[in-house]
Length: 390
Image (cartoon, rainbow, N blue to C red):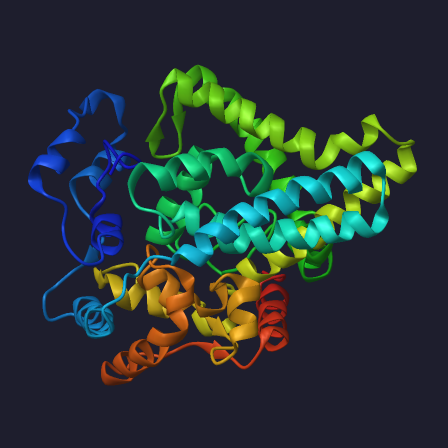
């Protein structure tokens, strides 16, 4: 609620408050008065209404009730257990130690190891923190704020582009994570000449995806300092300064640091290896979660749609029965479940997947899935190649 103050937060409100709604006195703490003159007509329409349906007899309410019953019957919480909280401390320590041996000492092996640790931490503990599924309340928020500069991204910008935009408007023109115009993933997007070769060059971009994203966001944070606006959100001066400083810190630690201790070409090798490995773990998995033929042009734009139906139609799983893929991806391999219940710790997705699949079948909805990661990557390549022409 703090994150979406001043916005219509119907979708996030419904999906993150999994078991019960917050008490009215708690909600009143986050109530803000909106100045209509501070918003465009398009922004005002989003404040007043949601494009999605949450009907009591609809798909989302039904699948939510079925999954709630699973947790009630098991008598367990939908958040992560103590083990995963302690693992966060271990992962953060491992990142710092491996960063030192790779960038300061100059070990190539340590650089590769650092990339693996950072990538896995980003999609596991980092991602779960960003979705408030590890700790309750402010503890989760402040831990994510502390971990973000060396693991994933800036809290406020990431929350805007991923938690709000991507998770609410998945695969629509308002999804800020489609990386357009760098790549074109849907025919409705305007074709640019460089898209002709996107199914070739995009893999190089993916290999340095994390520093590229950080650098782009760093540049984007500069005008925000003066305007106070970033997409649909309004930032305080303290948030604007934090955004700029955190991105700068991230780039210093993950890109520049080895150049301060080693000669140019060795430093370049160290930073490339570390970022290529981390980016491969994070970026490739994010791409195959939605950008596959199974999800293309499946959502009608001229009518309201059940929230859960939209998420099922625009999300794609792989390796559904594999615990290996579950933990390697931090549950990103079960993207359908993740988009339906983003505030749930990913370790539960494996057990609720059959419930979700059965509910999809009952409503004659597709349950988009690939047998393994390689099949998902091949599907993503098909989308890139198909959309490389006008």
